[in-house]
Image (tube, rainbow, N blue to C red; front, side):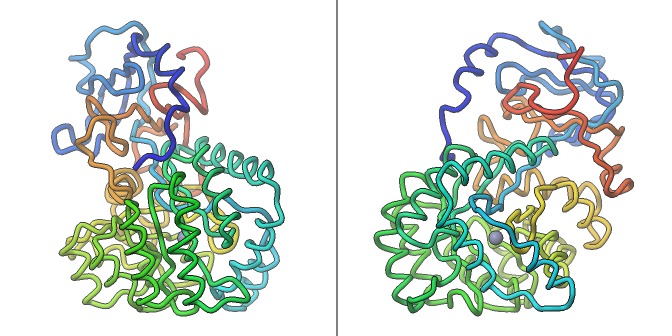
Length: 410
Ligand SMILES: [Zn+2]
């Protein structure tokens, strides 16, 4: 499903022969049954891949050696839900909401107006700024969506800009009905000319199945059209109330249904019996003063969950996956291990990535992509034990240090 290829071919070529041994890992989270959580561990990076993981005492030799002095290493965050192709600002709306006014889907139109008016370079620069902000906080794999253009040309250029920067791109033409059209007329456009215009730039299609956005029948048309065009399926659902989103996502075999703030027992059972990931967006729930999604209930029922930022200018303006993990632990009753797994492996699964595949993200084992998040702390527990403290010490992406402390041990 990767829509962004070729960006790091040069780095791959030059680094392919050089192996780096990372020692002094106080705690290594692998997200695999085979390796589990290792203490006093080591890891070998070769090219853009992890070559070896295991106890420090058994580590092989390598060209370079890096000592992380007891710090915790985990897979980079996989943020499977963002809306980062936009222009404009909604500070005033946020301020009003915090002063007591309710959130409605209509606020999206404010960003649509600003996005349509913005030049490509402005949209691309904003996207790169936020992508970099996320990377510095440990996000090494990022999905982003269109959905603030809502004309054929504006959705096309948003998709093309996203494909330049993000690891995965989703077409969310069906975000909200633009002014001057009926929902059915607009769905015709989304499933026809608009889908055709964006298809080369995207791997996924998404629909906001919610009262005030698109109903179940309209949402089903969007998913069917995307599937016919060879795209993977995602759904925004059950954000503002119980609705048809989860049912539809499961019925269509969507990789993920996102929000899941309001779920019936039937929804939870349907998710547990499916491979559809329930992607929870706690920063959005908090920023809209909604209840937090029922993460504990989903996990206890056997459903797969992911945590994502939903970074967007209206309802969740944060790129911090650590904040989402902290919230999931402190307020959604997940263990730290469960929350970390949901923000790494869970996000990868929500993007249809097989953890056993060559080059997989969200896991650290031989053959996985070498995307490492090194904390300035001895364990991942500190992410919740020390809420709000920036603990990212270093970030490696595709086998190269890309953010944070690198200096002497690079
Ligand atoms: Zn969203």
